[in-house]
Length: 225
Image 1 (tube, rainbow, N blue to C red):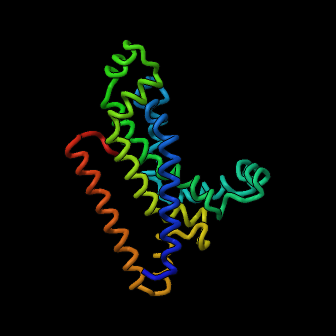
Image 2 (cartoon, rainbow, N blue to C red; image 1 turned 135 degrees about the vertical axis):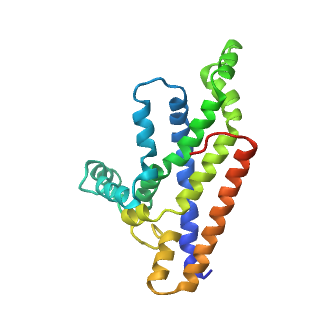
Image 3 (cartoon, rainbow, N blue to C red; image 1 turned 90 degrees about the vertical axis):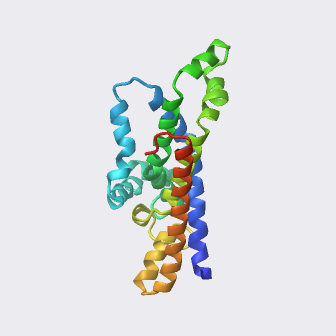
C-alpha cells in the first residue's frame, strides 16, 4: 500500500470509529425501547430503521445532500451556528453514515434485548434496583454479545460505504476521501494493481468480520439482521 493510500485508510478507520460510538450512544436506548414497547408506532419505526438496508445508497445520499445543504433549514442553521457547511465535510459524512449504518447497530441490539425478556429486570426490581440500575447491571451484561455483534457490524459496514459518502462528502483528501472512494479513483486511472491491493484488504477484513459474527452467533444464538 502506497503512502497516498494511507490517508484515506486512516480517515476511513476514524469515520467508522466515530459512527460506531455515536450509534452505541443513540442506538442502544432506541433498540431497548423497540424491544419493550407496545406502541402502535413500533412497526413504522422498525420499517424506518430498516430503510437503509433496501434503499440505494445514491438515493439516501441525494436526500442527505438536500438536507445538509446550506439552503435547507438544518444546513442553514448549522452554517450560521458554526460558520462551516455540512456538505463536503467530515461532520456531514458522519451524520449521513450514522443513519446509513443504523440498522446494523439497532437490529442486533433489539434482538438481544428481546431475547433477555422482562423476567431478569422484574427480578432486579423486586430487589430494589431502579430501571437504570437494572439496565446497566443486568440487561447490558446479558446483552454483551449483542453489543459486540452490533459494534462489529456497524464498524465494518461504515468502512465499506461509498455512495452516501461520495454524494455528501465528495472526494476531499484528509476530510472526506475514504478508502472506497480511493479504490474508485484508482480504477478510473486504470491503476488496477493499487485498486486490487486496497480491495483485497477490504475483502479479507469483511470476511473476518462475518466469520467472527457467525461464530459468536453459532455458539450463542440470537437474531442478527
